Image 1 (cartoon, rainbow, N blue to C red):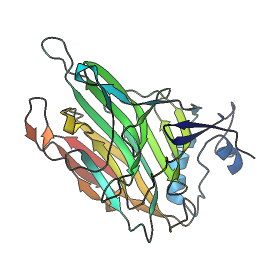
Image 2: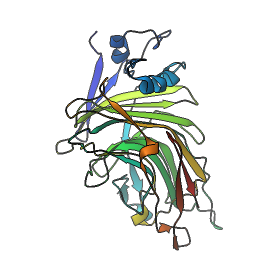
Image 3: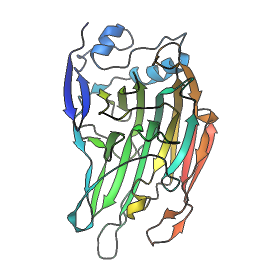
Image 4: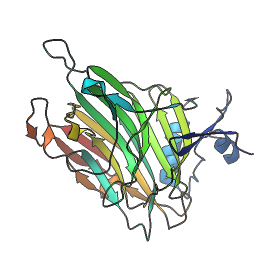
Length: 318
């Protein structure tokens, strides 16, 4: 079956969206071609890809409502009303907390990553004059971004208060100096969000996002702009203070736990398929932010990352 696609160009990226599945469509029994036609991740082989199948089944055994994604560039108004483009990653010791797994891309590049977390429940504190205190908390999964691989491909949730305005939602970014909101995909504090990135080449990928609390699902294909290319040398699960250098402090998110943290390696030139090798976050390296900017202008070490299981990561604000 030929995919019924809609292709658009956004700031140099070619985005592909798909036709929603009809009422009564069952991903558990549908053919692989029909799954692909409707933008649903094809069903992994239960015997040959047990880890991938387990994650897939946990999502698609639910009755989900498919959202054809719409995008909006993330632009913020800073003090004085000037535009500030939101940019996430790459690695900076002041901005990342979480776990990174590494691989030699010449032997087995990392080509896919999965993760699930709850959108942190946050409330913007107010000053005595009633204004809201600037802060942010960004959680995401991604490929690349560390050790000279700056073209990080990432998808996540963001909460931000600046210029007395509150913004939050689901976003994606692939290098450049800005990300994109998925403006019609609902997600709010406490919702459980599951994300999967699958690379088809070093310049093409599919992104799959599910709101398991609201039973919403979206997906899209993306082809990188000219000059952007993955290396596949690392994959990561991260809480980020993206605008640390602009004086926006990390919000006190309490604790955030990533589950289902698994990445996949492949041989060069071969992308997601049966030859992939799974890599749990438990084999990775924990990292923590240092010199976190607090609201009173002081700098302290403010996060603690703990690997609590083979595929589970806990990050505490402290």
